[in-house]
Length: 379
Image 1 (cartoon, rainbow, N blue to C red):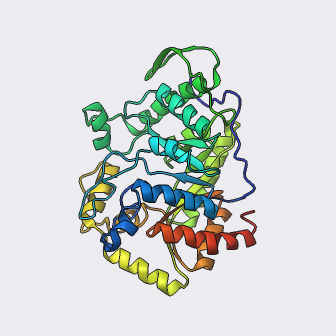
Image 2 (cartoon, rainbow, N blue to C red):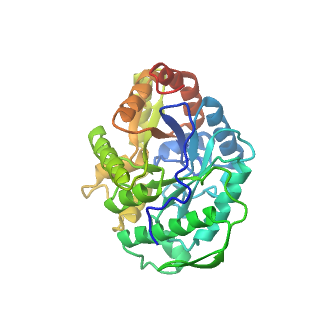
Image 3 (cartoon, rainbow, N blue to C red):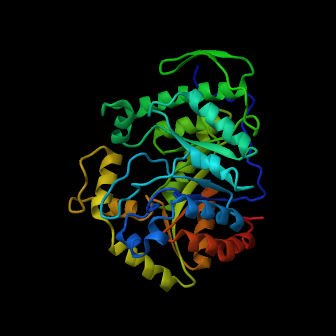
């Protein structure tokens, strides 16, 4: 059996805000910045992933008014002089820990479907964290990103093709949804997964189940999200490209009789003046760690490590500065206007990464979110 499938229907996001704000990549060394600028103050710019800092950062984001947080699901770092993403807080256990020190913010974990997990693992993990957090847990579903990470679980670099990985994800989520919905043991016989007498007794608190997200904008990725998820996260080079993805995704979901929200991300450099923000951006840009960036892009594209000297400079730059998130560099008014523009082309949620996350979260709470309220995007 394959999707679209929603036993009991789709869950709702109950929020008075038209636009939702999320904090992204708070759990990995360097966050979303592949620049030697993070070494200027390691504790502030690189090592905020450490639990004493990260836990306080998520609490601060909640107090500032952020609606959700999404960790960056990684198992393998990319080295370079900065050790990009070499250290990570686990995306499942950290959500469980955060459930006990937060009250309102929605907490996400990530599953890499092809990394040898069984749907019963995440049906149980997720139900437990949702229970512990009183219905504040969601799952980001990805098929895997790097063959080298896949090899850590499989012992092989021979990965499934892109579209077959999504077929595997379809089956994974179908079984997981049934495990959340069924009060009796179920038998499941699929191509990729089997379960005899599968049962999760402690059900999720959110009804009918937790929020599901997919990150991707390929044809297979959009179709998967339209069938199975509540949110689709994607990035694009400009507003027009993002608008086209939003229209396509919503039409696809409507064809399946489902609702789908669109999320995107920004790489935000914040300051009281445009000149100050632009100067900091220029400094970060001038310090890009080419070795770590080339390794990251080479793995992501399954190509040999890409050189800055071979026609990929702009792709590598977009990746190094925010992992292809939409650049938002400027004062509070500019920050708010950029977010309003993203909302205007169909994005109801924005995941934000900061070079300087503690300053950025405080800046948003004090100066940007009030402007978004004036625009009618926040309650």
